[in-house]
Length: 623
Image 1: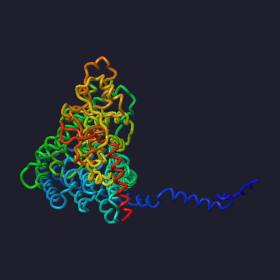
Image 2 (image 1 turned 60 degrees about the horizontal axis):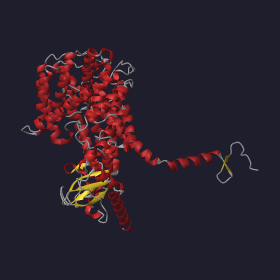
Image 3 (image 1 turned 180 degrees about the vertical axis):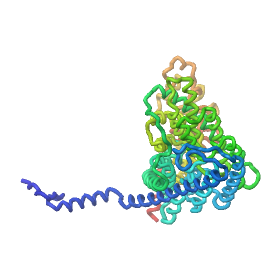
């Protein structure tokens, strides 16, 4: 009969007994083998260090902008914008000497242009795009001088009245420090990329007191399609939390926006919100098109040295600001007034296009600052205009103004930046409320879908497979060294079909084979099209048209057909499979119509890729 262990004893695996402390030690060792404690501690330390620097950078930029505003606007112009220092302070004083803007803004632009072009050209424009470019195309290498110079240039640009945000500069500061730290510590390229993303997250999350939104933004904004840099999420969360704590400890813990919006509880309003999403998409497309047209076709073709362009942009903005001072700066104070319903409709109608122009003048010309803050202002004011119109047209289904403003802020940026999830969380954290998450999700999805192919961040790539940073991970170099002719199976039997074959005969042919793709060859054996069994299934439910159909009516004609040449590499083949959503592609001698050589399947490419990987591994083992 087995003995019952006494009090204070513990059973061993072998049936003996040992002290509880020894059992606890054994469990601790088991935990340590299950989790990489060293790796966890290292990333905790590195991400925290990046978060501290980004948080300090956010505080320094805030103080720097306040100092420049105090000197240039308070003393010289006699202008006190709302929300300076604390966003909740919405009192303001109109410019007493607006003509002074025509002097200080071009001079500030001249100084910024000279500094940036002389010491770090990558610091011009909105810093987030520069980090995205560094991640994808520059191996996440950012020069250490970029961060300090970006802070100085952005403080001058925004403090003098430039329509730009603070998030881009601080994101570049955090990412720049992360890149330098990775080089000093000798981290791998993969680890450096991860740390740079965490630095960007720290800058966004710390500056806007939105750590979760900042982390999601950093891993999402790199790609224009539904892809994420998922392995950087945990370091980004840690860095963003630390940056938030550091910056809030120095500049205040309050949320960015004060709002009394009620919780969403009227489903009929979703129809109105749906229309708001369409309106925001149109404004977003106009915003991005204007921004890049001015950059490439106006400022980009301007004669003279590059460093004078921010001065020209400053002069154009000053001329606009003499009549509409609300377009200057980040605009959060004016956005708070919009949330409070204190700006009239006529002014808001002017401010939406004026803010687009002001942001374009400031950043497209080469000024230093982010696009996040102006985008929120444009989206929020568009929402306010829409709310006013909706309350006049359909008062029973019209949401309150503050709801449309908040939803407009998040959904507009979701569309123009291709960050449908991160922007919603950012705005919810900045306003301290998740009450409108449902309509924000709906409107953000609509705006995101309607603005596909348009982005304020032109350095984004569709997905990880399209990023040069991940080429090594996907072994594209191996695929590029292999040609289609090397892997094409010459023994593969291919059933081809004449384009004039009646549809009933086509049914008989495909019933006798397991083939799923059928090339269409003319009388001279040239490829003129191709159809699949899926194309046949689409017409099986309409037997009344079978007698009218021939094989040439099915599938894809030659002018839209995806095909491969014998000299194409397998990387090209993979991209063609993806682009045409096909599992097999015809191989021809030249551009169709041309003689058919064979069919290459997606499975055969993957098989050849796997064989090449095994050969490479065997060669490394022999060395």
